[in-house]
Image (cartoon, rainbow, N blue to C red; front, side):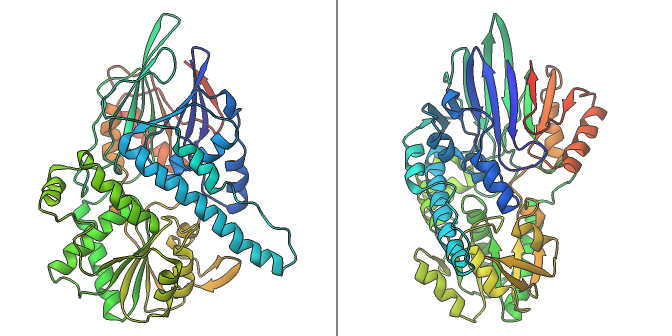
Length: 464
């Protein structure tokens, strides 16, 4: 057996781990790498293996840094099954279609600028037609249901508690008479997050690929993050400004809407309009409704009473059309705008930031981890000036960062997750983390006598 680390190695995004077992190739995730635009385009476009040789894909969850390069994989010849939980299959179908639309729209917008400068046009990374081909290949499975993605491999999904449908992946492998227990954590969630059940921790494994995004950081209690977000909203409204929130359309957006619902219902902040400017978020809500099996007990009670937190909110408006989105820029009254993408790299959020970042009344609120070189990271780092669609803008709005809203496990839960396999594990591979975070976690695990912890390089391969 051989593991090839073709993504999310020495970085967080672009999840892509290729397993070679019994002469077959099994790909765990196929996500978009997010960073400098030119680097990202080339890195996402070019695979370090032939997609035609991949027999199957297992997808941990729908976030675009895990699912977003599937259209390229299929475009370049992959013809197998894409296994996922049923909720992930439904959400990822929306995600890749939305991503393709953004790829096409952004290419069109940038090409207008390039034409004005006499430059050659660029091609979108992939198209909506490519995304439609992916959707037909999803094969949905239930949590805990065994399936055989390639010969000699029995796979099961288990609850990750990260976003709707997110799962860890357990593989029971038999190769040349040898049996191996293998776990891929995907993105590990947190306890007591609204809407979702807590993550399940593994009890045994011979080998494990594990995320390390927050390997150096403990998260605040989700309720403390709520209090901090409430303070941001309250002071921004008081000065007559807008709160602009780049947020992932699936998961984070629903949590933020629920938080705003609580704030306004309790009278903690004035009732102002809240806009979710993301067609994907609207469609994702329909998927949430179709998969009550993915919710925690508290949310199921809300559903039974027709009080789903993402829907039962009078001040909330979901924006579908481009004209409705543009109309928000003409308004000067206090409001909250939640828009995708979560790292402010593409989509409608770019227009909201460029139209509001130079007004000191407003706040740009960063509520999730931001990849290096993305617009979201630059804002979180408080740079004095940003470039959006080729133009420069002075950052005069308040920049607020709220880490406690993260859907990723903090350092303490990551250690607990790894300790679950302490008695059986031969090696743990840390991925989905920058070097500082991963090496901090590696040191902590070694202190717990988990000595065989490795932080693989991009495109490194390991024989088991």
